[in-house]
Image (cartoon, rainbow, N blue to C red; front, side):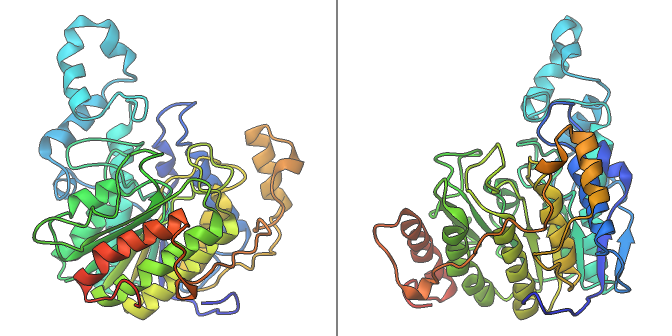
Length: 417
């Protein structure tokens, strides 16, 4: 897909201001303002003025729905933790020590996942948004959907992790399988390994999980290596490409294109789910991939082509990480909404002054520090894999390690396909 392609596609965008209640604390990196600013930027750019695009309300997932991917004990622990305003109540009241031990086992009350009063409901609403999107795709109500509040890929079956309470991507995948979809592909483009989604479907050959991420040798969660390729009955269903810190757009895009389309073609998914965490951006404080808005937008265009070529144009796109809520996240996810809807925003598009002034007001930043364009003015050219393998390049070494592990399991040649 190119910038000139403008073919609106029946698309749902999951949105309600209730999503802003997923808020750990005033100082936590997962700032809900990033969601509000994304929606309003897309609105002011005219992205939502599309006859083929509908805004869908994200419902709160029920306990029974959440139990498809989480244990009943874990869901109960999250609900009980939501009775507390913060973990300090547990530390100061000896009678609450049993609760604290329970929450510790569930990964709750940590620095990453502190307790807050609306935790269960707000988390279940994000999960419900991705579930509702999957339902709409499975039923044929829409071809594509976006839940930019979703992508909480670190949550495990019985444990919170990495700012993630309920695994909305896992819930969406589970619903698609339950509705009769035989093969679902999940591609994770966040800076961090999509460990929670991978773990949920580690032994399920119907689900292909692909994660391209900054190496776990350097970054949380410390997992996602080439030899992590799925359980005994699902070998090749997990695909991981760890990338070196500071890689930049060219190296990251080269890795993506050296692995993702080849494996997707071989797997032939019926639905594609992609996760577009934008914490790989060069300004993000929690990762070091040195990517640009332009590079991440290119991967969204690539994902649109994968959906068309390999998944009969059925595509659910999710948000994820992203901790520069004023200069970066809204631009990237506004691009995401537009691309999923089949009407990409040209890179040189100016950002409305009204939006920039609002950002300056809520952030305290000077207006001059708020971007004026939907681009970082970066050339995203990359060297294709066909140009040749460089044995001295650490990222090429990583890509080749993955191709050697994975490609034969899908009937592909690691050197030539």
